[in-house]
Image (tube, helix red, strand yellow):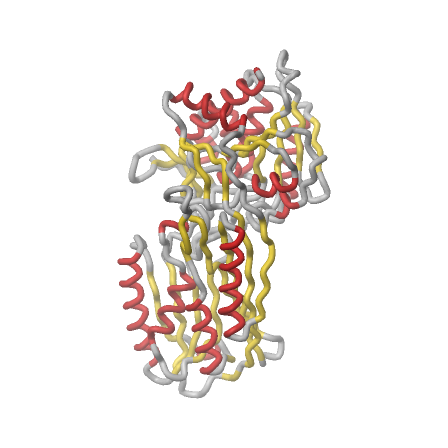
Length: 502
């Protein structure tokens, strides 16, 4: 069962108010750093119901929600989520994230048959649109019993958490917080990893392509991609690393690089990558041999059945200038040496990734006069250990400097340290057991949550995170499970009622 008329079908799902609000959010472009329209939409919805909306200079929003009758004496509870989404699409999908909303599809999971909502060739934005919709629904539904609420909706979470970093302790009153940005409906999260970006840049002298050289384009495609925190443990293929691996495997003497690009965002495992190179006659055949070999190896190393590595000859004008063979070797060696994937597991939490790195983006630009090629590589490192985060960034820096790169590390954000003595956790765990007749998982996540930054900015915050089942976040495979949204909504309603009582 697949419906291309997803918005109408989705709005018929239960809980109706959550899906109605999510459909409204999905209809509005809301990429990171471009949240003006979604902020206006949320403000219109809230003020249309008589609620007060406050904003700070960064664009973060707080919606003040009066308590249900009889619950006015309860402490303020903060419901927190972020307004932006990761904008990823398949190469064959025509979609302008700045002008078009998301085309939702009501479908079934091919493996389980469970009902899901996904997008048509793009990310869905259930991360974190569903969480925002649940928070708004709690505020707007009269039947939901709750104490005073503050809906804290941040901007730019996906591209650096700069919204959360701008928060001040006096922007909101509540000191107990429910973050609605988790993606498993059977767990309560109480910790997350911190992160840091590292950027490596080179400016190489470029020379024209020699006459008689074979100019070749190599393209890696068909990978699953995904969340560089939540999916990194699955050893999914990295298009950037596979591209470099195939180029180096060819072993072509005198190979020259004209351009290389791959990935789009720091927090997304790159699904596609492309390079244009030139070599002596015979390079095309050698590159094809290497591409086929690397493709077959990679399919055995990770479940990537759709991985493809194509190699085709192109006109020399595709890359009129190229690096020297020496600089090509230096750059490819540096890219091969950069760490990617899981770098260490937690000693305290079984199965939890402690440290990882994502070689996320590669871009090539030419100088105006065509005499230089500028190569920029972006990596996102994550760790629940401050010292291991520093070691990882130092390793990346060392590789870059050995290869003559300029290296900058920044946009760091802290992890969220678990608090097993949290009163909010005790309430949430008790309510879960009462409703579902089994205990929830109590977990930490390798992905970044804004709770770490909020806890650093506002001392004494008591926080947990939960949400519905979302899979494939940060990729066009993103989907949210319909039954799980209903389960999470019922759970949120019950938790708010319990918090309102005491």
